[in-house]
Amino acid sequence: KNDYTNDAQHYYAADNAYTDRQGNLVIKSEAADTTIIGFNDVTLEKEQDTKHFKSAMIQSWNKFCFTGGVMEAEIALPGKSNVGGLWPAFWLLGNLARHTYVGSSEHVWPWSTSVCSEKSRSAQLVSACDRVEHYGLASGVGRGAPEIDVFEVQSGTQKANTGTFLKMPVGQPFMSSSYQVAPGRLPRPGEGWWPAPGQWYNNLTGGMNTSLNILFYGTYNHFLDDTRPAEQDYFSDAISYNRQLNSSHFGKFHKYRLEWELPDKNGTAENNYTETFGYLRWFLDDEFVMEVKGEGLNETGAEVSTEPMYILLNTAISSQWGFPEKCPSNCPCKTYNCHGSFAETCGFSGGFCDMLARPAQYKVNWVRVYQDKNDPKQKVGCSTPERPTRKFIEAHAKKYKQTSDEQPIKPIQNGGGICSPTSPTTSILPQSCGGSKHGKCRTRSTPWYCAASPLKRGACAPTSRCACHGNWTGPHCLNPTGSDDVVWDPPETLADLGYAGPYTLMGSGPFVLLVSLVGIALVAPVVMRIQKRMAGGYRRVAIGGS
Image 1: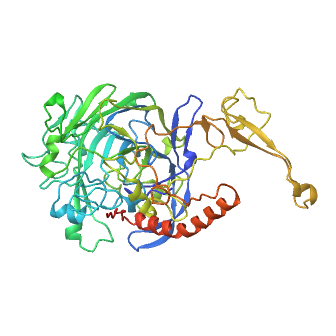
Image 2: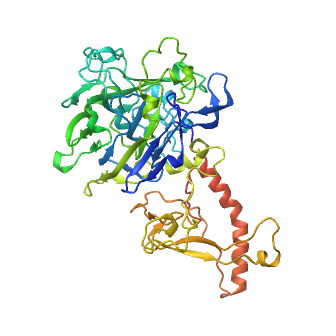
Image 3: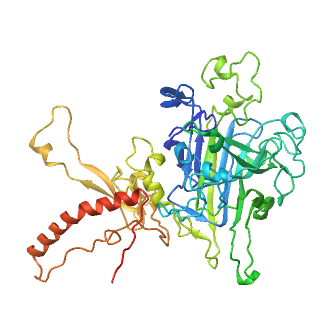
C-alpha cells in the first residue's frame, strides 16, 4: 500500500516482509520502483506517480490490541549508524485510526481527553461534549487515537552540541521515544529552544544519555475538508526524549521496552481509593530512558491513553527524516531516486544509495506483551467494554480500506496454497505445507471437463494444495491459529436483533422447514433495516408496558 504521510518516498509492499531461516521477522527496505495512482494535495486530483523505494509495515490493527501492561521486543536496527535516510519505528496507535489510511485519523489522531472544551467540541471527532450515544460509544467520553512511540531511530554523522543539535547533549544516531497527544498546549517553546518555565509539561524524567527533544514539540493539524479552520484546527504535542545510540545498535539485537500504567479515577483499596493518573516508561536494554506521568498531562485536559492500541513495526524513507537539513547547492531536491540522474540523487545523505545497494534489514526476534491478571483495567482486545471501537469502524468502513477492498481486513486463508507432494514432510516449508505436523499436501484429480474435451492451447493437470491440521492456518499452514481469550464485543446475531424464529406445534419435517423459510423471508427485511440503522449509530430502545 502507498504511504501518504510525512513526505513518504516509499511504497509498502507485502513481499518486503518475511521470516528468515533463523525465524526472525524481516522488514526489507530497497531502492526499487513502484508505479501508483496517488492524490495530489495541490491540484486535488488523482495522478500517476512512481515511488522509488520499497519497504514494509507490520501492523496488528483491529486484530491484536491491548490496553495497559508491558510490551517489549528484541530488535536489530537496519542500515548504518552514520548514514541517514532510513526511519525504523516500533510504536502503538489507538485502534480508531488505521495508519496510512489518512481519512481514519482526521480529528481522531492523537486525541486522548475526556474533558469537554470549546476546542474539543469542534476539533475532536468524538468528544466529551457529545450527549448522545452512537456506535456503542458512551456519551460524555472523549475518544481518539493517541500514539506511543517506543522508538523512532535516526542515523547520521551530526554529533551532540553541533549543527542542528547545538543545544542538545544527544546527537545522531539517536532513538526518539515519545507520547503524541492532543489537545496540545499553548504557549509552547520554539523548535530548537529549551522550554521556559510554564512552557512545557511537568512530571517528565529522562535517563542517562538522554535529552528532551527540543527539535520537535508537536504538530499543527489542518484538514482540507474543514470549513471552519479557526475552530476545527488543533495542535497536538510530541512529548519526547532522544536517547544516544551507537553502531552496536545496528545489525545487532537489543531489547526495547514500554511500561504503560492506566489512569484510575476510582483508585483501589491499596491506595484508599484515591484517583491515580497512570504513567508511561521507556527502557533500552533494561536501562531507563524516560517517563511521562499522567499528573503532568492534566493541565491541558489530556491523559495517559486508555484506548485499545495496536502494534506497528516499519521502516519508512522520508525526506523529513535523516535527509540533509538544507538542500545541497545546485540540487532541486524534488525527486529522490537512487537509480536516477544527478538531479534525483543529489539530495540524499552521503552514502545512502551505496548502503541500499544491498537491501537494509530491520529484524525482529520477538515481541511480547505482559499484563497483570489481577488488574481488571488491563485487557486484550480491540473493542473493549470501556473503549468499544467495532461498531464505529463498521459504520465508517470506507475510511479504513482502499476503494478496491471489499472489507477492511481480508479473512485469513486456511489452506489452499500450492504445494509439492514430493516435498519432505519433515521440512517446515511452503512446499510441504509446513510439514506433517502442520498440514498435508493433497492432490486433486484431473477435472472431468479435461477428459471430455481435450484443450488445443494447453493441458489440464492434477493440482496439489495444502489442507491444514486443526492448530495451523494460512495458505501453506505455516501460522498457528490464535484468537483472543475473551471477545468483549462480539458481532450481533439475529437473536440480538430481536429475531427468535417461527415455531410450530405441528412436529418436524418439511412443514416446519417451510414455515421457517417463510418466517425468515418475512423477518429478513425488518432485520436488514434494523442492522442498517444500527450501523448508522442508532441503538434499540426497549419500550415496555403493562
